Structure formats: C-alpha cells, structure tokens
Length: 122
Image 1 (tube, rainbow, N blue to C red):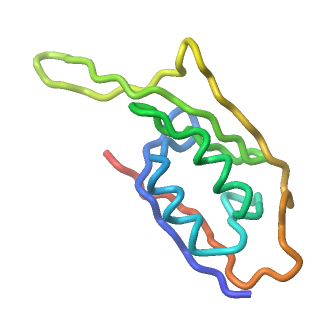
Image 2 (image 1 turned 60 degrees about the vertical axis):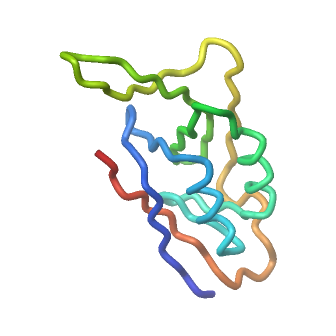
C-alpha cells in the first residue's frame, strides 16, 4: 500500500477544518482510501457524497473525532473597521450533514492511501 500526502488549503474552525469542496475532491480522486486523523474511509462513495454537498458560497466543515463528520458551512463577508473579513456560520436553513465510522467503504486491496493534512490558510 502506497501512502500519499495531500495538503488542501483549509482554515481551523472550532477544532475542525473548513475546506473548499473542489480542493477536497481533487485530493480524494488520487487514491482508493483516505485517512484524516486516525479515521480511514473509502473514497469511491465519499466523492459522491461530497459532490452532493456542493453549494455556492458554502464550504465543508470536516472533523475526525473517532468518526469522520462532514457538514456544510456558509461563508459570509463582514466589514470590520473598514476591512472586509470572512466568517463562517452554520446555515439557518438547509443544513446538510453526514458522518462515517472508521473503516466505512474500505476496499479489499488498497493500492493508494491518501493522508489528508490540511494547510492552514490565514
């Protein structure tokens, strides 16, 4: 089994990572399984679920505390002291969420394991 390291851009938010869906999909396509923290999940069905969570002006909030949790989070721009700032809030309507336990959808023989370690952006 070959392990490749993928480092998509992300931001920390309440102990989780906020990652753009396009960056996450690009990282997932390179392997058969993904490892985030200590959670390993198969990528084939995970890619389809992430595609369903793509909405304009929304990104993905990803955490791995014993299980992989993915939910959408809205990006807002506010002006503070004349400087535009970005903040993230959970959407009031249309909250989408799923969680996967360790070992979900793992194929029999894993050729390439993608290890996700996001790069901190700003």
